[in-house]
Image 1 (cartoon, rainbow, N blue to C red):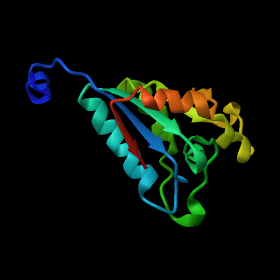
Image 2: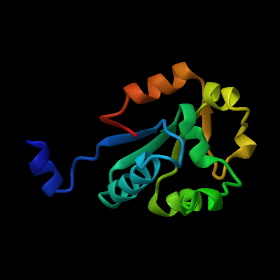
Image 3: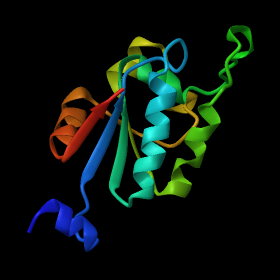
Length: 130
């Protein structure tokens, strides 16, 4: 049976992981990535997110964007649970290198070392990086 036929019958659920590597402002990647994640959830797929490198800043508390003239979209991450997106993973090394801890983040996450995160990525059907 093809994936197209399975999807029409509602049978195939794919594991999608969105990998966020960019700082939240200065490029469109973080905001566009968040929008794609929300759209994916509407299609009832198994959606998770990983935050690596400067992507950990997307989840940081206390973001003030007035000086750069952009809307602060970080509160949207709190709404992910309402879309059944509860699998949020953060790279421990990325937090450490930026002087952040799990307590500095807006939402509940699972902090993993690089090897654990790589293993989680290997289990996915689709990886999309922003």
